Image 1 (spheres, rainbow over the protein chains, first blue to last red):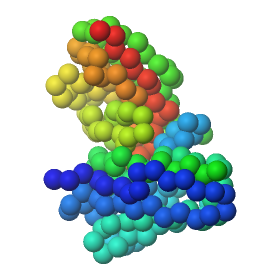
Image 2 (spheres, helix red, strand yellow):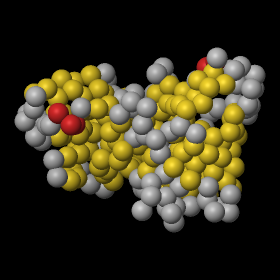
Image 3 (cartoon, rainbow over the protein chains, first blue to last red):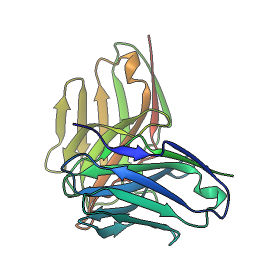
Image 4 (tube, each protein chain N blue to C red):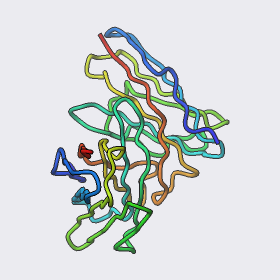
Length: 114
Length: 114
């Protein structure tokens, strides 16, 4: 069974641009979550999608958005990029996103904002 | 407000000995706890989890202990191997609306010397 797949693996953007990251969950998993990892803040929850609906959201500005498609694949968008958005963005999937489910993570997209 | 804390940034042990990684939490609504292992620029890999109805869970060389009254959990690795060298994160979920959301500690860098 293939794991969680994230593309692209690396991305370099400049301030003010926007970026879209893609995530394909494990087959059969319908919940997709996004996390940001930075050296200073650690791993922080961005949002979660299930059946194309955002069910949960972390404390990030509206520049961070996402969506989920009918095949459970998900995209995350960051608009008006800032230097502080440089981070490893991780996607995770689980069957239904229940609280007692473990999450399976992809390898992440390393975003550098110059 | 850091709800999950790993107070030891790093731990160094000799191959064959026991590694003990500690984690404290403050949110009494948390009822599911997990440990993940992570290499740089990769996604976290699930190791072991424990529900709040248990105080111990074992899986091979890995054992997690939960002390609910102290809001403390620990991960024991016996025997430690050089391949165990990585960053270890504890994570927690719970509260009724935590769809896809894990709250992570800051991580502990484990180095196992041959």
